[in-house]
Image 1 (cartoon, one colour):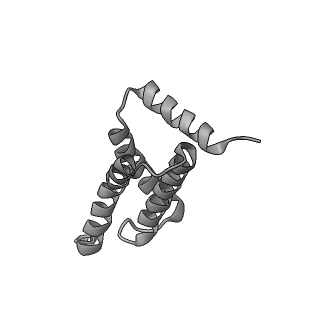
Image 2 (tube, rainbow, N blue to C red; image 1 turned 120 degrees about the horizontal axis):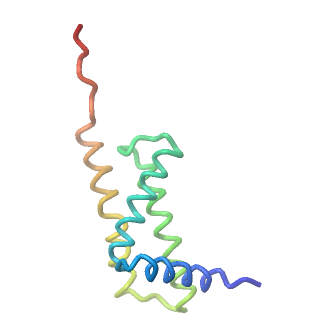
Length: 108
């Protein structure tokens, strides 16, 4: 039987080692990539909670797999991961909700 949490941890470490990027930066980029992918797939505005919810669910899945792999919650690692992943997607969602973009009048 495949140990999914261990396999996932190996892939994440491989990405980090291969890119030379810190865990913090990887979470920021992953949050933004998931947000944009969710926007494209769902065709929902970034101002709706749908793309943001996909990011939150992806991060939850990431942290649950970490929990299963390490056999305990590592709060000193989990809390910053959640903040780094959700910060910019949340800011973008709020900004689009509060200040939606409107098409300018097209004058002839």
